[in-house]
Length: 239
Image 1 (cartoon, rainbow, N blue to C red):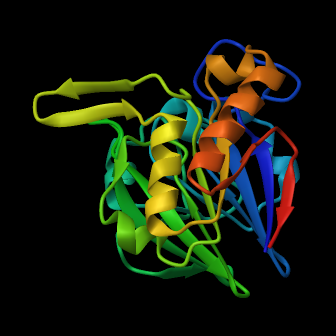
Image 2 (image 1 turned 180 degrees about the vertical axis):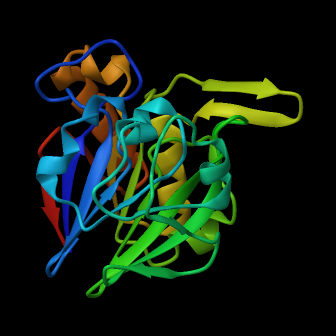
């Protein structure tokens, strides 16, 4: 399995050469190339990738609005995402049932509900192929059934909206927003996940001093025995 970080920028105004496009991951295995999320930055641009399929985590504009004019390939998403996805004319739609492993182009996706948004309910994906196993959740406050989601995972790929500062708000009884990187690394430590990659980068990462940020995060990760990297547009990882 090869992972290509097509985009690593969150829903922010700032952008740099390293973090230019809205967050999207290309999962490649044998002849298949599955694109996860297709935000507004990708409108009219993702077609050159010729993905075999597209999988959506949720319906926020920075994850789905690149499909406003449709898609040249099948699009897979949970029911709640299809219910909230608007202004996108997609003919070839497929349903991903939560907690049901689903093969898409030879790659297995299992959707786990995560807390993030009331209006656009989100999932993270446990993704496996050829003996490789990752968990991908670019937007989240916490993972429901976290132990099951992260069991045996080789790489956790998570939310970089904030490093240590809380970015979580309450709407009634529901939490919305983004878990800090520090919290996500604690999850990895508790569940025995050895490696983490941070994507969906917020302003703190995109516009900050890269050396200071990297040193700070390495120290936090070392305390939790996790090997950590910050993703950048175009970065490739092979498992």
